[in-house]
Length: 278
Image 1 (cartoon, rainbow, N blue to C red):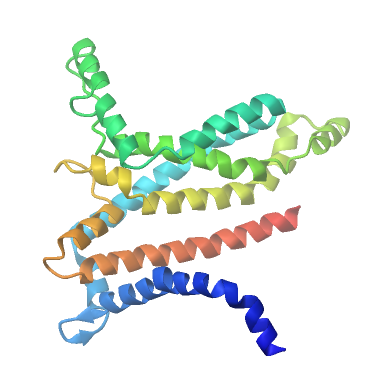
Image 2 (cartoon, one colour):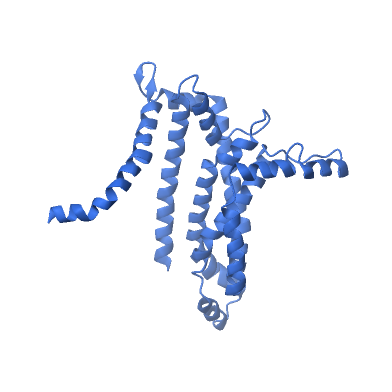
């Protein structure tokens, strides 16, 4: 009987080995490297990260960037998602196909496209300088520029993620509230917002995780000295250089993993609360 169960699960063994090789072992090596010190093992690397003003500024920049991305996606994406749900199925299908294409167009290619448009010598930047001189557009490596370019990536992903959860609002609830004499304000404050809040919070946490781990586009646009330093980009630079060892980038990576695990736990907790409401 046991042999039969083993044979049934045997096709999954290569996937398990691949998962251990690509996920579990690198995680163990990261933790091991982050705990290495000159005296052996300890938490000196973590203490140094939090006491170093440069590293603290990098972490705060990443948190600020992720918070801005989260707020912008929620404020802009929520009304757009609700508006899409009110469209006909044919129109919504065309728009969702366009959003799907936009959500999959990212990485360094998108970064170079923005550099050609609004980079230091981009077409729009040059036209803006000639028309509105002496004002200048914010650089792509600044906090404003990073939020603008990454919103192009995260907003379509947020819409793809939120549409199924926002579909829980049923037209019957609105009709029932209207028949009971409740206006739009009371319906949204008593029914719509309480029902959607757990899903909005869960989706916002995912956007925060996306922004904290964003690497490809920020790496391309933050090469100038005046650019904003982000945690993910700093980890990549530390691994590429490796002159002073890998303890610092490994420690930063472990901090990034810890916040991701905490957010995943919070996300699952919030989602379960939303399921109980339904």
